[in-house]
Image (cartoon, rainbow, N blue to C red; front, side, top):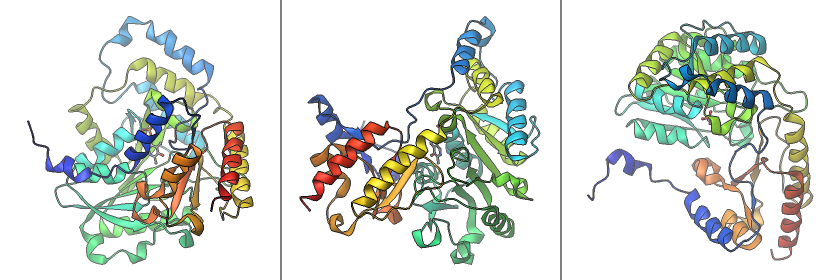
Length: 386
Ligand SMILES: *Cc1c(COP(=O)(O)O)cnc(C)c1O
């Protein structure tokens, strides 16, 4: 067997794997690595969520196949959540679909909406799976640059008319991973107008809307009039509720897109283990765990520490990422690799999120304060060499 699908061949963008192998080698030698790499929450979910999983796992009915469209109780709770949280009305029957994490919804929306050669508008830099899922469904990527001088928001007016006409789908995600960029409702209003004009579906991921700092409050895309006519929004329990390993989230919005997503899912997976849905209900029903203060303190330690060394990093208003432009003095080096080799610190190389990320590194704040302080100490020593 020596063949591989062209589809898979097109992926071929494994920026993170070299760092991974250096990391594995170091870990085997017992090196103390400080890992800012993955956006993987380090705090636990609320105890009652875990208890609800255990309780419902004992019910034999829950060991049978779940429905693809999920428990009606979960959809109803998700609908109540959106009403309470964003004042958005959603019909639990037709406008909500549970997902095995937002990532699953990303994979399937292309299957549902994109044909060979169709254009998908992808922010660059972005959550790298936007590129991957587009390529896996034989779509064509059109990059919308997220530039620091534009606040990491795409300039819709710069998109070529011919491209816009051929585009089927636009991915967006605010508060943004990896740039931590944020938007106000006015931007989403422009998106709705643009998408309606060119008949483009919008997939907005609302993953970090509940990790905001200072006075910032993130809007939901679905709060915009007309958004439901053209788009869906994915909400995930992974980040806000520290449930990344549980694999649960949901899609909300346009009923035709929801229906198409459900049809794809029906033919690929068999839904979410019901006890996880029951645990998800208890998460959505109750207060969110108090994670904001923790991330905010970590943010301040890291950003203040970097800026003291001459970096120029703004404090992000949301997400648990710090998107830092790499200082010029390091710029001819492969900075993330040198950092790991010399200081045993892992950051995510900006290029891993797209061409326009190449001068940046992403620090994830999913590690304890003392580890962040230790990283700053190591970086201060490193300064002596450059
Ligand atoms: C973390 C993250 C995801 C993954 O969400 P899951 O619900 O865990 O699949 C998707 N999109 C973005 C932008 C993320 O940052």
